[in-house]
Image (cartoon, rainbow, N blue to C red):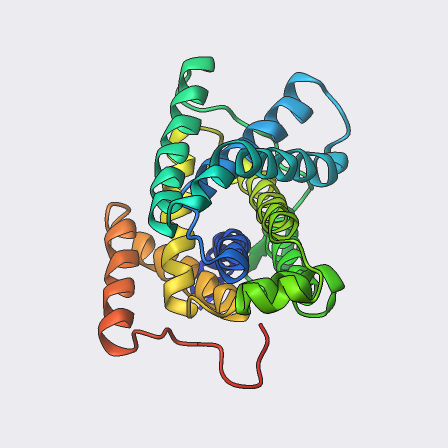
Length: 291
């Protein structure tokens, strides 16, 4: 039983990271109708920023959770302003296609700059683990699980209740109506990309100690975030969190009881089962719900 609980806690840790990444993916989609396939690349940059801040520069670790996400958010908004905004004059498909190649460019640019297999980042909360009977909980497990889930909850509250969040939802719901009310489409789109970039950067900082920094991180995170978003319901931020947790737990138990190579296969099997059985996701947004 203790082994089961420890595996469950380990799955919650990775699930919390997936949840935070999925929240950023869905928030941008809800605000702009764009599925950003470069989101994984932004998460990778967040992890790389954590490496530079903590390992190379030796700055305080806790500041990485504040500074790095803001930098990635500004970078994401800059990408939207310089590269993607002109494509809005074409169609939505052109923008989504461009994000696919942007993700590839970010990964390959990192590979060219740092020709190493993986960069290691130390854990934030070091020290002896907690013992709950026979169950061992590391400080890193507790911090990442709690921190990422709290950040995801705050993001949902921001998108639902903050004036900026309401304005993004208004623009996505009815562009012409929002413009007549005084909202700027360019400003709201840039804000949505900044918001999603901040969440991606924060997910990268949380993921860096356990997953390391490598181009493969971009692929694994965008895959996990997309699966979590679909499983939870692609229109629901709360569903993204629950879908991420389900995915993290499923992958962990598959790696422990089947094989490590089955981890990815099980996640996509979960995706196909949900799409066939409940294509709207397990926790879709319903009338009266705003998240």
